[in-house]
Image 1 (cartoon, rainbow, N blue to C red):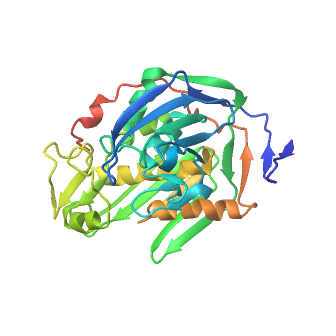
Image 2: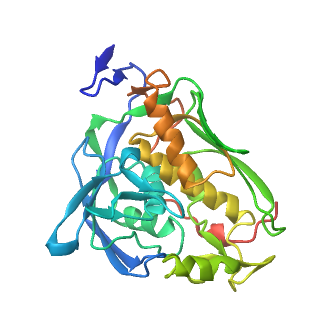
Length: 329
């Protein structure tokens, strides 16, 4: 059965297994500082009704104004060192990717995120602190079917040798991400992961953002990385890591790039049924491939079927302390 939405997007209602939408069971809060702005900020997570989506209520604007910003790819205004939704004139929220990754991987479809500053707090540079908050208050099902965006044909964006693409893949959301840095400490790394709540918790949630010491002065002169420190960033100096605790994963760099991609691709507005591949991509290319996807109505469809064996958002909190243990493989 096919239904047409007000925007003309076709929704296919399948008799296959359904998955229910979810929101938080109760209100929750988290506070920290922005990695770029170094400004203190508080987030208040409010449960939201079915089909509300993830929306940010930006408070603290000039004149006491507030602005509601939907977390969709259309709202992205910049995507250089982080992903920003909204705009500087009427209000924006930056560095949303780690939070969005936590929401996506936790299967939270509907939430109002009240924020009193310009930037989501960096916390420890990963998604783990946000997931800990969600686990503490709990997640509840809602009486509405979850919708998925199903990739029907390849969509690709390129910049020189770099690329990001979305391919058909019927069994859920698969990611293959590859990076290549001109330092022996990182070098060329590649990882493939079938994304589920369990695999995100086990493989990605603790991976931290990273940066190079040689770039710090330039970034700070441009107004970035003002809040970066060894508490929230893996600092690379030549072929050495300055953080006394070292890496949380042997290949933490590629894992964090995957975490970023999860957060950026959450701006599709629906969980993805498909295969995301990228080589030396980043926030800009992650968002660009979404623009290209939704510009081609033949490249996707919105469905209410759940891929066999995939239960996004239908998991219980898991103990993941061993993520900090040295890897031997």
